[in-house]
Picture (tube, rainbow, N blue to C red):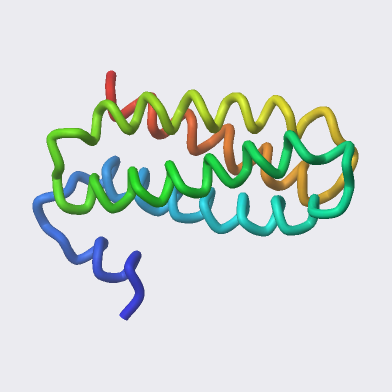
Length: 117
């Protein structure tokens, strides 16, 4: 059973929380892919670094939300901020992986912001 399947079975989480966990996990995966695609291209170094930061933050935020940690709100803010910065960087590049990454990160940032509203 995948992490997402397990989370969908946790009754104490709201639908909004489960969706945020799912998009955070998707953001982490897409960012790892984007960072890997950027490797070796000096012009993409900042993009790769930001993607790695987001991958780590989004993954951590998803885990903290799943266990209903008291630090989830702080991580939601940090994750949203990192997603916004990385999406802005990705939007500056023409690569398909950057376009996809920016779209997912925009959705992730919105979901994380909703967790603190």
